[in-house]
Length: 128
Image 1 (tube, rainbow, N blue to C red):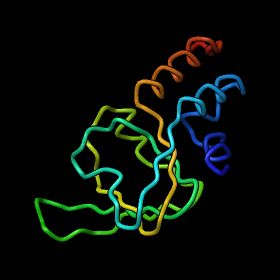
Image 2 (cartoon, one colour; image 1 turned 120 degrees about the horizontal axis):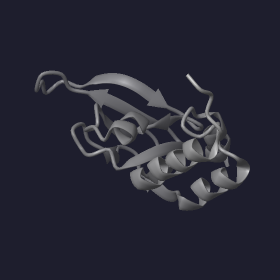
Image 3 (cartoon, helix red, strand yellow; image 1 turned 30 degrees about the vertical axis):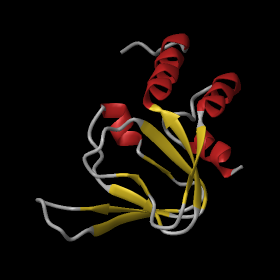
Image 4 (tube, one colour; image 1 turned 120 degrees about the vertical axis):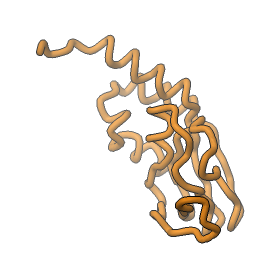
């Protein structure tokens, strides 16, 4: 499964021990999207971090209330998105929808933050 490899490389999770990474993967839920189905809309709460396991997801942004959408990025298998909203408890900056039938894995915000807090506390920190 590509999502496990993607977690190993992502800046939020690459510092985790294997046991912690296993906990994260067990907390993730599978999300299947049909072509053109929306994962989330611009302005929504950042409640999940996503990893693309199969298919493609394109993210579009609307500026200043415009009806026109601009393609920001397309995520392929192994791609991750939604992390900024999760980390900063900020609204989604874009609308993301599947361009093909897609399988994503979603990690709830609370789990994401908790794992990183525990990891930060359990690792010795270098003094400043």
